[in-house]
Length: 211
Image (cartoon, rainbow, N blue to C red; front, side):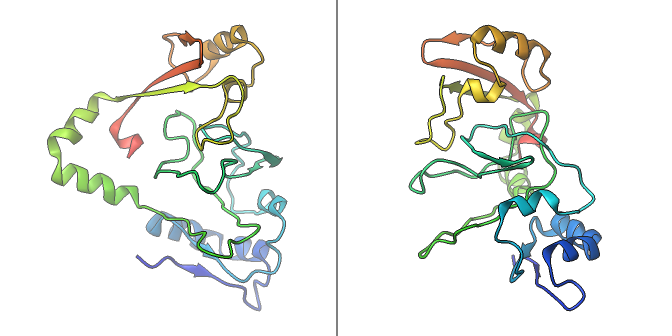
């Protein structure tokens, strides 16, 4: 599939102008194709710019998920602090959570001299393939799946899913985690079993959400 590409024009010379003047088209094409590529804009050198783009959407405003990340400014973080050699499998952003962003903006500050590609996968096609080719398996997912992870005490930046329980829950102690877990919409009410190596999270997800 060829993704739509948006480039500077006389009427929209900057990426801010393009987002304002073509907002509806950008969001519509994102819905249809899954992604829109921005190419050739002169004002995309600073990642802080992403927080100022006006697409008529609200900022998610918090860094969550399994990846160890560094916050650049409000609403903008590094994609993943793991080294380039770490393999990141296909995934949905915060697919394990009940709260997740509707849109993501990716910005490459320093393009790789060799390689550096980001592979995209249309999960709608994956879902249709699973439902058609593996109907029994697809039906079994209607009951939900269990998402398990062991969270380290401190961020492990050697792993693409090495975010610590301190960063995940914004807590300093396990007692704070238990308290926040009971108030959180993203955690089950069954408690968080404490392990010597960290904390284990359980999540029941519906098939449509995860695919």
